[in-house]
Image (cartoon, rainbow, N blue to C red; front, side, top):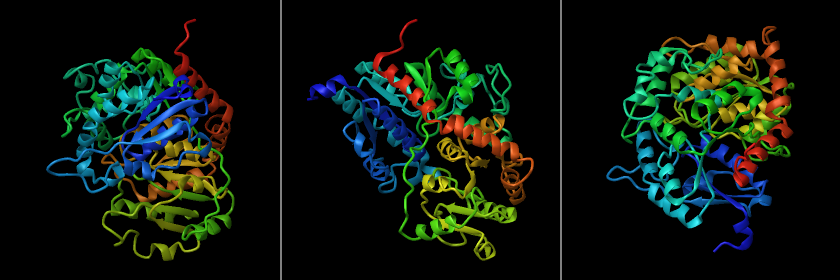
Length: 473
């Protein structure tokens, strides 16, 4: 039974995909909405919830983590406690999708019990449309994508069956903006390697039995509105086009920038020594290098990145995820000795937001994941982008188009070189050519990404829609 206060609150169920690059933005949105007295049930697996940040104490009465176990697969179960993409080897990603699809009935039961007004859903859970319709709950799609990426993924022919493929019958069709983009745009795949991967992402069925593109389209069709972590000042043209082609209200959420917090004092090793080292560096002189948890870099890729950092001659902090092959030759032979004093390497987890907020950090070399873009540029750090998977190449093109990033050059096969990394880093950090980039980055940080009032107003508009719906003029 709900108490009278709860009955008067708007209740929203948050349903993110099982990736931390999706769960964290969903949590950021949950916190932002709770400040407008909106009650949140945040659904994920017990193992994922244990690894998410704690709810701010002043909002703990409004945001509740709701654990739901991931069903076991038979006869070939996922690794024990593996319930997020970061836990799963690439060859078993379809199995994670199959397990997630098995959550449909347990989630339906849970939503029926909790009776929310809204479900805010990620790109994956196409069956949430059926749940929402059967239970009389309204649905909003929050796909953790930019408006430009959503426009690129959508198509007028994305309606049923074979018609989905007729819009782009081959990977070559991924190498230019789609026909429905009626203004100049650079947002498209740049080489055959990217185009093949993007085409497979949208049109390959896989073991789960449904393409990711079909999931996305079903959710667009079944949603009352779309919400996107972006703003008119950055993507006004794409946001207007997305609303036009989908026929849905599209709500920019602002950037949901990281909350300003008192700087942590790290006392545990190795971070106390690393913080001491950062404190001794000149302001905006250090490059932070990190590629997140979703894409698993190969040994060759790690080595080429390391050589590129070394060639750049710049101070750096290189955070390397512990690879599947263990501790054998993670870095090139002699690398740490050659860069001693100029750079620091940390194997394993890194407190990214704390690092990016440090005054000595001046640039980030990373994968162009949108959450990391927001964090980096909110602190005024230049962006040097080396995208790998899913929407990362498209987000990288958007940022280059807007004059806010340098992208590392790649060959037609997707390969990159140490020289290309060094050139991109020096262009962003020290070259005369990069002065305009550095100035634009500071301007975008102040005017858009870290602008408290601007971002507050976007969330306020969305919160009012959740409470009252769209008011007719």
